[in-house]
Length: 325
Length: 182
Image (cartoon, rainbow over all chains, first blue to last red; front, side, top):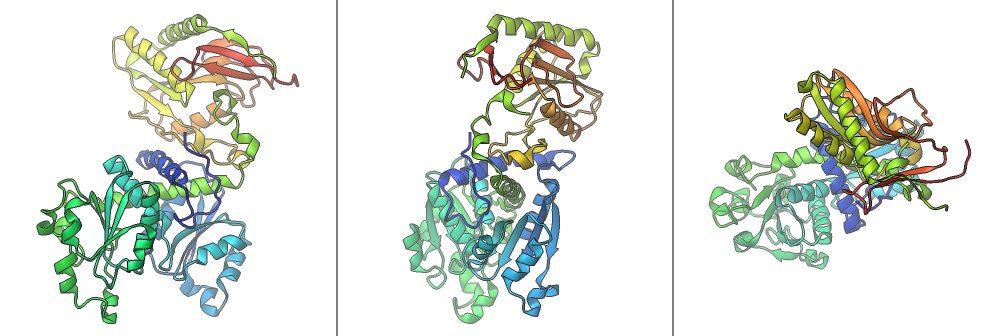
C-alpha cells in the first residue's frame, strides 16, 4: 500500500520524499487505464474547477493538464495573460486572488519567475500545481520522465541516466535530477561546459563534457532541447558544431547499450540534438512520455485534491473492507 | 472494544459460495453471456473463487474483471482522496453480457451504486446481478442483492470483518459490536 499523501500543492520534486514520489507513480499507473476505457472519464473531481494560468507559452503541458482535469470530470478555466489584467499591471497575487474569489480549487501555473508557484501557494486556499517556474522546476515533467523510465526498465534504483544538452536553464533537468537521485538512480549531466554548470556536482550528479565518453555506460538518455535563441549569446559556436559532438544519431547510438532508452521532453529540434531516425526509431519513447504525462497529471490533481480534506481519524480504518460506505 | 464474534467459519463460507454458484447457473441459462466482475479488495478474491467454479461447471471460459470504485465514490468531499487507487481491469466487451458483480459485504449500498455507475461507463451489459457473501442490512439506497451467502442481523454501528485465506491469516466472518444506536 502506498504511503499517505498529505500535500495540497505540488511545487517541486526537491521537497518530496522518495515515498511520496512513489505514491504519485503508483497512482498514475492506475490512472493510465482510464484513458483506455470507452468512456474516458471518471467522476472523482466532479464540480471542482481547475484554472490553467500559463504566464509563459506552452502547448503540450497545458493541453495535458486540461485533458487530465477533464478525464477526472473537473471544469477547466483558461487564463491567457495577453488578454488578462496581468498585461494591465496587476500583480500575480492579486490576479490569482481574484480568480480564486470565483470559487476555484486548483491553479496550474507556469511562470517565467522561479518561485512564483511557491508564492501563490502561501496566499491561496486553492491547490497550486507548478507547471514550470523559470529555471527552477517542472515537477510533472520530472515525474512523467521517471514514470516512463520505471515503466520500461521496471526499476529506478541503480539506473544510470544521462541528461544531455542545455542544463543551465533547464527546469526539466532539475526536476529529473532531484527525483532520480531520491529514488536511487545515478545521474550524469552532459553537454558543452558553457551549458552544464559545474555547480550541478553539488546536487550529487556526475558532470561530463564529452558524450562519447559516457554513452556506453548509460541506461537512459534524456535529451533536452537546445534553445536556438541561445546561440546568439555565444554559449556554443554553432548549431552544426553542437550537433557534431552532442547529437544522438544512429552512428553515435552504435556505441550505446542496445537497450538504451531515448527520451525528450519536447519540443525537439530534429537534426540538432536528435536525428530524425532516432526520434522515430524503436529506442525512442518520446510519444510514450506524452501519453504518460496525462496519467501523471491526473494522479497529481487527484492526490492534491484529496489531501486538504482527510481528517486524521478517517485514515485508520480506510483499508477495512467492510468500512466502505 | 468487545471481542469479535464469529458469524461464519471457513466451511460455512465455502458452502455459501457453492450455493451461490449453483443459483447463478440456475438463473443464467445462456452461459456464453456470463461474466464475473469483483470489487476490490475482498470482492475480487470472492469473485475469483466463484469464477473458477463457474468455469469448472460450465466447462467453458468466462470473462473476468475487477473494479476499483475509489474514483466513483460519493463521499469524496467528506473523506478526501484515498492514496491507493487500484487498477480497474475489464478486459472484455461488456455489451450484451450478464455480469455477476461480486462484493464481500452489502451494507449501505453506496459501494454497489458506485460500482454500477463505473460498470456502465465500460459498456451496456444485458443484466447486472449482485452477489454478496454477507448482507448486513441498513441500506441507504434502493439496492438489493440477487445472490446472498448469509443475511446477518447487525446494528448500524457494528463492524463486520470478512477475512479470506488469500488476503488474511484466517478465513471467517466476524462481527465487532459497536454502540447499539439502532
